Image (cartoon, rainbow, N blue to C red; front, side, top):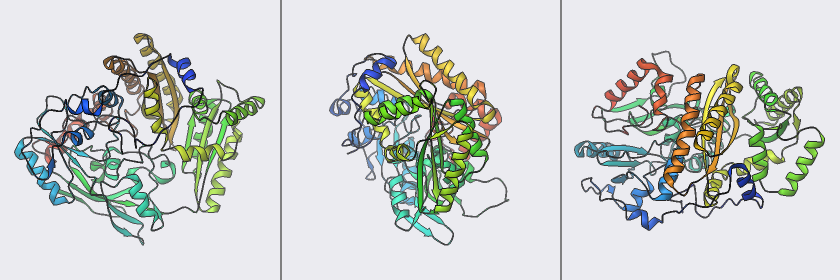
Length: 530
């Protein structure tokens, strides 16, 4: 069963290796598990629903709790401590567009807010009811999750927006196709959520972002239905798909999406390469991207993340042998940086991608160590979020932030953000273990992903306050350096204060105007995005 206060299926565990607790204490200090509220204790805090009775809406307390928060650090602290500021007053599971239109009408009559809900994996507050808000109806798309049509001649597939990653891939693979969108939240996140937040998959270098694969669909708004026809390309004015992409439920509810799919690759290899330094690795990755090699992924960890990955991977004997061999060849901590790259396609394409990547890697001092570590990463990539549960149970919290910059400022921006995070730690008198990797690579620049590991305080408010100091410092540094406030997580609540710096006053006004046209009464997910 899915955990109500953590990540994933409660039968799946990710144990720490034998020396893990010692390393955690070394990095950020000794800790002890915070007190967690029980499910029964939290359910007793849920107030009565304020929605009028309706047969299509459930007001069962546990269902309302399970749709109350996402997966951000503040969400985790709220759920674990039982201090949840607001709950949806009801949850609906429509199975048709007509049912969604009826729910929009119900919310309008009741003066209620309505929050579209995909897989509940948001890490920036997209799905949270607001405190002191009117009654809130959460609408889950979970039952609108079928493969509606597959056009094999055109390589197009149409799904209900509630289809999760495993549902999408299983339906396509049965017919010999793949979408290739694999975010870390793949297990639960949905196609509609990927579109509404501009989610990016781990192999976006090869398979593209939603801007590339979302080619049409339908969105139900309180005003009317927005149809996005499937056309290969058009010069007929602005592309309205880009109004839907990243709309975060403010304009309407995405009910159906047509996506570009590809035939299943016949070959796919994941490789690991070590570099003497982060800087040399970054230059190699830039060169690979600008050489347009047929690769599906490039992921470069800085020295801190490289060492942390090896420490927490277990397999102590194998890792020890790896360290010994790397030291003998001059690849030593704290310098070495680890690159995972993937080549995907037919045999000739995979061979060409591997050959090109390794040729460039050698020019920058890269040492190829084969496929074993790359394949181990691939096998565990959707398991790694479960480590969050284990760390919490040892008294440690973990969170992430991400951005993107042009190549001319990627490395100096990482340095600036690290400096801002150091200042925030010093101000709080607390330590954080800060890890960085280049996660999505483009010809003109790269995104990077920052992971923060720190002690969870017995007082939940102090845990959140330390996180706010870190998150605020990093966000201000990102904006000051000219990066995007979000490359893949979206805006939600957490990034909303920084959006105007990127969009400008006129851009923000255009977004607000679009929302008023689609949702004149302002009932859809208010308080998010803008």
